[in-house]
Image (cartoon, rainbow, N blue to C red; front, side, top):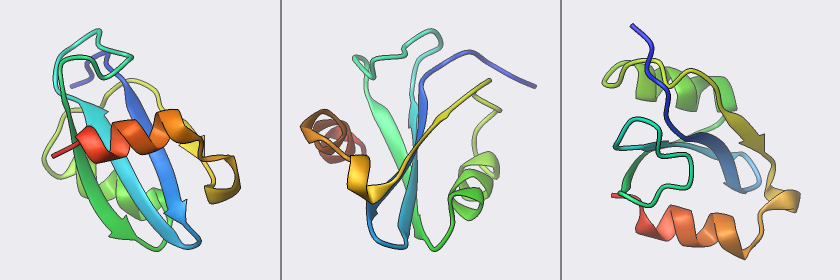
Length: 80
């Protein structure tokens, strides 16, 4: 099953990957909350960890640690 909602594979620091997924469908800005899975050593492992508990979010962004801006830090800190 696939739903449409925000999903980010985020490398917060080198080799520490998290999958952050929005709680509500069609929430691509993580306004209604989000859940984080990780840390893992690869983005694939983070996605697999999330996939064990959540339906496929449809698509995702992959953000490496050197591209993490304050907006991604806010989303990470907001995730439960």
